Every structure is written in C-alpha cells, then in structure tokens.
Image (tube, rainbow, N blue to C red; front, side, top):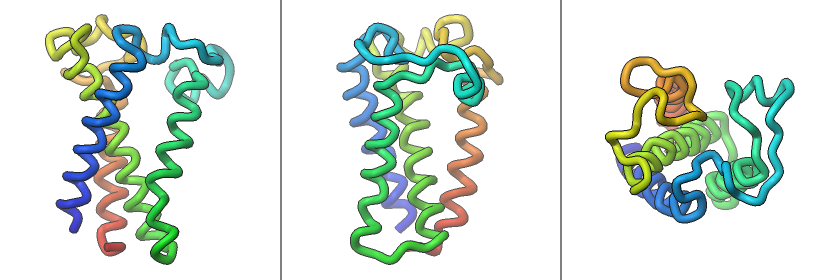
Length: 148
C-alpha cells in the first residue's frame, strides 16, 4: 500500500509542477503574479527568508485540505495524520524539484546555486531545504505506515 501511495504522490507532484509552470512561467515564487506579498518580519524568517505570497498561502491551504479528504471516509488517527502530512510534504517537495526540471525556462542545467534567487542555501547539488524535507517525509511516512 505504501508503494502505491508513493507512486500516486509522484504522479500528483508531476501534475502540480506542470500546473505551476503554466501559472508562473519563468518567474518562480509567484514573482510576477498579482497577489499580496509579505517580504519582511517574523513570518518571513520562519520561511528561511522567502516572501509569503497570497498564491502560495492559498495553494498550501487547498492542498492540505485535499490531502485530508480521506478523513471523510476513515476515522482519524495519529498514524493516519502522519501519513497524510508525509504525503503532502513529499508531494510539494517533489513538485518544487520538478518545477525546475520540467520548466523550459530552467531545466536541470540551471538547477544550481546562484541561478534560483529563492533558494539561497545549498548543500551539495540541491537546496538545503530539500534535505530537511526529505528527512521529514521519510519520518512522517514511516510513522504513518500502519495507517493503511
């Protein structure tokens, strides 16, 4: 069951990446979208210095709500919540990576430090954030593995 869930997560990450490429084009992190932006303050420090945009705020709420649809059909548990959150974090982590790989304005050749203004800190070949997210995804899915 977990393998099927991970395959579905990857499928949705591809769909989201293609969708977001259509919305943002070459201007990532909603740079040219007509949405509100918070660029300074404590909340921005929590995001590692990334602006908080109306686009990302509402997209996040929408995706978290969609990921929790199974709760209409099965009882809530800590294990299920862990699995759902692991699915969500994994999906947006992969979507972010795929946005660069699939975006004709970037591609894998431009996926590196200095080319992407909103990923400031890199560890090796990927943004530092990716390593944190990978650990979070593995832990959450592992803790939720008995939910299905």
